[in-house]
Length: 173
Figure 1: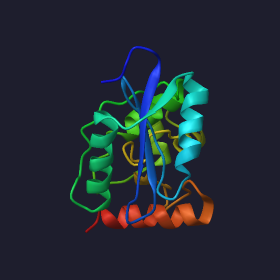
Figure 2 (figure 1 turned 120 degrees about the vertical axis):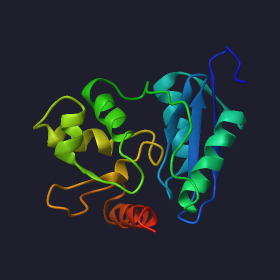
Figure 3 (figure 1 turned 90 degrees about the vertical axis):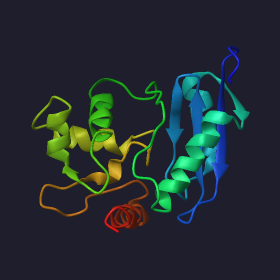
Figure 4 (figure 1 turned 180 degrees about the vertical axis):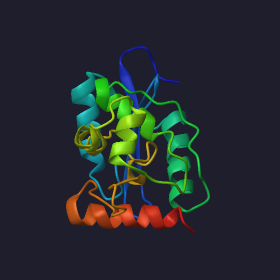
C-alpha cells in the first residue's frame, strides 16, 4: 500500500528481451518502459513529471512485473492491471485507450486506431501518441502497424523496430 505522502513505487527486472522498469501510483501503473531502456531514467521521469517521490518495490509493481514477464514468455495474453493515465492526455490518451482494446494476436492500422479514438483521418497524430506511450507493453502499441501491412516505427529506432517484430511474432505463436 502506498502512503498518502506523495509517492510512487517502482521496480526493475530482467526479461529475455532486456531490462524493463515499471512505476505505479495509488491509481495504477503509470509507466512501463520498453525492454532495454534505462530503468533509472524511468524513475527520474516519473518523479519529475508527477512531483511524487520514488519508493522501491510494492505489491502493484511486483504484480505488474510478474504479468510483463508472463507476457514476454508467451504465457499471458491479457494484462489485469489498473492504469494511471496522468502522463498523457487529450487525443493522445484516447488513442492509447483505444489501443488497449486491440486483442492479443491482432493488429490495427494507425488510421484504424485514430478512428477508434474518435478522429478518423488523424493517423499521423495517432502515430505521435503511440510514440509517446508511457505504459508500453501493457498498452500494446506494438500491435499498431501501417495501413499497407508493413510494421511501421517503434521506440528506439532500428532496434525498436526489431523489438516490435519480436513482440508481434510472439503473439503469433
